[in-house]
Image (cartoon, one colour):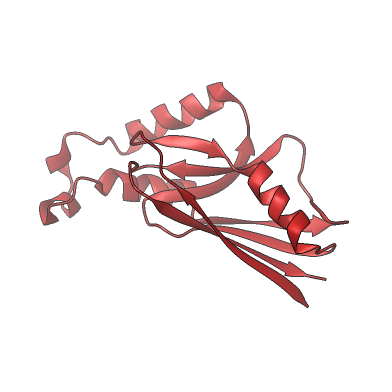
Length: 139
């Protein structure tokens, strides 16, 4: 069995945002030379997410508005977590909704997506470096 492990680093200059990372993942699948297997993409920070959905700007705005309604950033004092000196309790909750990782099959050396599927990095407490693990395993 072959494998490839890589780490991507993201530092968004905004508190929240979504980045299509599909091209980066496709390059790593090609680099791995794996023809049949799986690709794990995992946010390695508790206020960031990796998920699969459509690459449509309106949908991304909808996510941002919906998540902010579910877990608004302010008032900061509404969250017990923020009593520790943090101001990112909302980011932890948003990550929980959007998920930690995704796994995509590799078939014939390519990510095996359904129609419109793309991989996204979701940031909910930005302006600092955060890592994403990419682990590709197969033959």
